[in-house]
Amino acid sequence: MRANVTKRVLAGTLATTLLLASSMSVFASTGASSSSKKSETEDEIIQSVQSYVSESVETVSEAASLIPTTSAVAGVKSSVSGVYLATSVNGTAITTGLANIASGYGLAAGERPYARVYNFDGKKSNLAQACIDSAAASMGAAVGPAINVEIGKMAAGKFSLLPADGEKITLKVGIPKSFAQNGKTFSVVAVRPGGAVSILADTDADPNTVTFDTTAGQAVYAFIKY
Image (cartoon, rainbow, N blue to C red; front, side, top):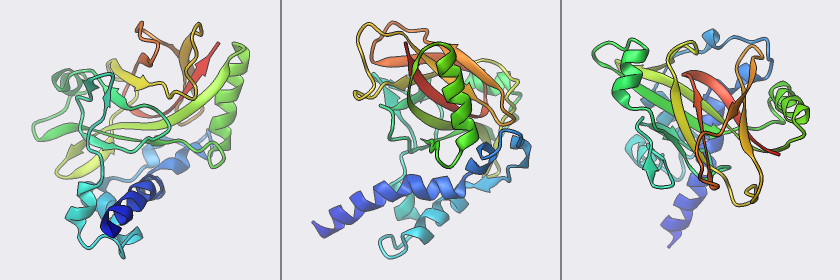
């Protein structure tokens, strides 16, 4: 029983740990560029988790077993492997096929799409949060939870972001019960490093999900309703 409790506590710390190991700082200033992000290997990400919880996890492989590598929304499983740690939404899935992403972004043999999804903290990235709030206010909308999404590639075991000016990639995100509301229209505010803001329309008819088209690279995506 104690082992199960330890794993539950560990699962709660994984998002924080990955957040510290990630490039979250690019959103601390909307003038920053995602090109400053250093490459990270899967092992480096996992080892940072292991280091943070070394008393509970003895091996890298055990830490890896606790990191969700895929996510599903309304029965649709994400096509892209990675780390899916966002708990503020009801699942996140990239629905564009791997072959389409690979061809649309010119991936070479041995390169594969890879995603990192985790909660967004507006207090730590106040300028990005201000962009979200301003966009929502312009539509008279209420702001809901937000997530960080990094869509990149793994090549020779190293992760790097794909460019944000590539082909369309579709995401499906589950609306948490705390923000769901009948009769409301849902959209997503996207904030990119550098301060580019866009409002992305929901393209599905499911009241429990928001499906929207975006591109690769790094962005914060926030639910809004009006």
